[in-house]
Amino acid sequence: MAKKTKQAKSAIPYVQRLAEDDYIQAQLRNAAGRLREATARARRKRGRAVEDKKLYANLSEAATSIRKAAGRLQRKPKPKRRGRKVAVVALAAGGAALLWRRKATGQADYAVEGAGQSYAPTASSAGDGAGQETPVPDPPGE
Image 1 (cartoon, rainbow, N blue to C red):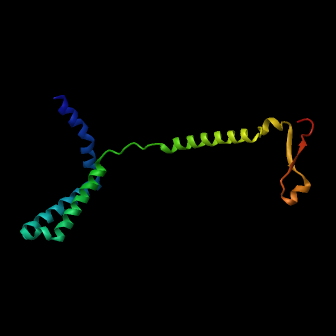
Image 2 (image 1 turned 180 degrees about the vertical axis):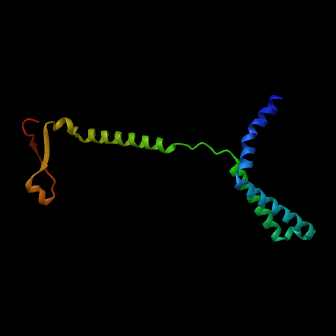
Image 3 (image 1 turned 90 degrees about the vertical axis):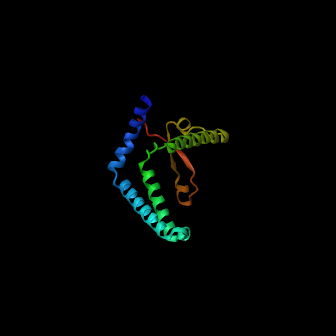
């Protein structure tokens, strides 16, 4: 008995969706109409129904409608959050590569090396784009 009640309870969401969703109902009505037309056409054609293109078109449209209704009726899977994991891994790999590159080239951390000094372009390099900077001491009192 418990197995039957469990099966009945698991079918409740499907029945509710079937009763409430107009799209599913329209697809099932379309499928029923196409199957009715295909049955009537097969009865009229009898042996020649195998070669009837309209019969096959009706059957194909009915099958498509049933597949669409069933797809809409099924439970929607939970979205997978792969994008977040990829972003975190990419950031970690980028940070590790940056640290490794700085260590390999012998560059030190600017915050420690140039503490108390600010960098400004020299007047001679401002026009030629060489980009060499010379340290300018901080004003007293800061």
